[in-house]
Length: 181
Image (tube, rainbow, N blue to C red; front, top):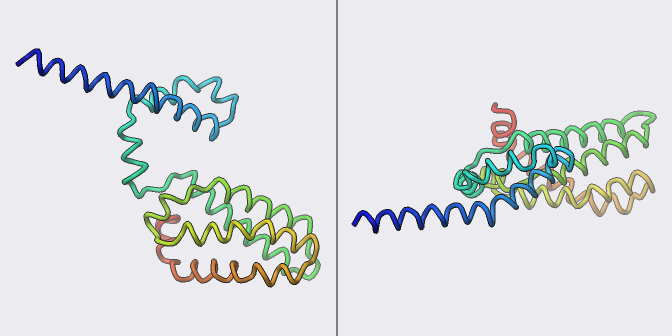
């Protein structure tokens, strides 16, 4: 009986380690390099991701069941919204700086592309679709400013209004989620 239990424990431990080595060490190294850059990955790449891989069940749980949003995703969302607000404010000036407006929209595009919406979607249904629709129209918004294309603006304004309606409808949930209010 003792041999059987020992054999079962060894098998479970071997499977656990095999999953860590085959799946989670490469995955964590890839994510670490993608999020932190090549230089940090070279310096810390074998330490941090390997430690994370040894506790892979925590990360599996966090990915599929937790509703907590990472600080990075909060920052990406807030930066995207802030850039869009400053973009809008710049264009509403008597003498707007179109170069500044373009810079703000580029920041919004960059930050929006970094945002992982999966955890937000778990908290606010419909967020991913609404945010992706907004993201799709940001490059066109840049073209509108560069080319002063009113027809293109009319085309994308539907997405902008839908995003605004989504924000207004979910204002309390968004404030609670991103600002703990």
